[in-house]
Image (cartoon, rainbow, N blue to C red):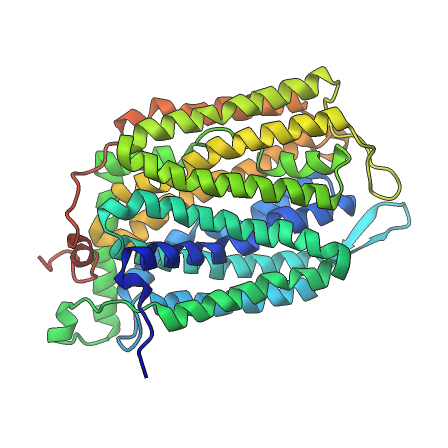
Length: 474
């Protein structure tokens, strides 16, 4: 009986494998940020409440770096060093996602007519736990990428990885919205865990890591509390030096906490705006699907272009370009007299505004082009500047800070788009988009100082990222 092929053994296999792994990361993100958030909006939830919900469940992605030392240092030898973490986290993702679908909150009205969302706390907590598993899996996937991808494949691979994430987001968001009309929200939502199970099967059957020899293979170290503490202590000391005593580490942290271009067209404001323009679920699903396809193609193209013309130049051009459709859409809303979200009718719908819907399509498509071009480049840049000896934690910390940027952007946009009477800031759309554009341009003042280290030759990566390459090991 022939043995199963190993996706990591060939360029096409590696690129295809990481594309699929990132689909698994995008599936639940699209489900919560698109399908669930839209369902909440139609139930009458305010933008501030939706923003807080999305920011809350995304929190594990902001401190996923805590898992890095575990992924880098601990594994069972009979299983793949990263694979075992990916599979274990994947199982947790499926279980918690199924539970959250079954626990979806309802809405009732109190004696004073105020809407009460029953079960919202439990639902949010379950999705928070889901994202703990998802963030852990992301750490292991990125660590595997750092060890398995040669330098010359990183740009294209990162473009494909985030194209995969967007593909998953489209399936989890637009896919659920399409099926909702025929099967209802709950049954349609099960497409997400079913797809996750299919991808988990690929990981188990088709991904096999090459074993990297460490000193423990020659002379096994005792797994005593003292030995484990010493190893983690040495690791953390090296990590602190990398982050806070090197120019690359400090500037990398600054770049990571700044928005890279506009974000308002893809986060809380877009979730609130689309249905209030009068768009139905299928129309929103159409827009989400088309924009995801555009993003996916451009994400792959961006990675390719960054390999040819340099990360910093291409990142700056494409990220700044996302500000153009952001400001344009803000001005179109201002011209039409749309300053704040209108109140819904009794059935939770809004009248159609065809001209603004057309403008929203144009702005979303243009934004998707440049956001896609930017996305894969940004992560490839951070992969270029990591310290190989602490690859999982170093790269993950940068990614966690990028996610922290998303978390606080969800939160401030939700507050900004909500009226003062409902507990928000009451800003106009034009003001929100202008602030978003200003924040999204700050990175250009720091990026020129972030210079990658000299390129490694293929084949050096695996050796450098072994846990053996810790202080005192050579």
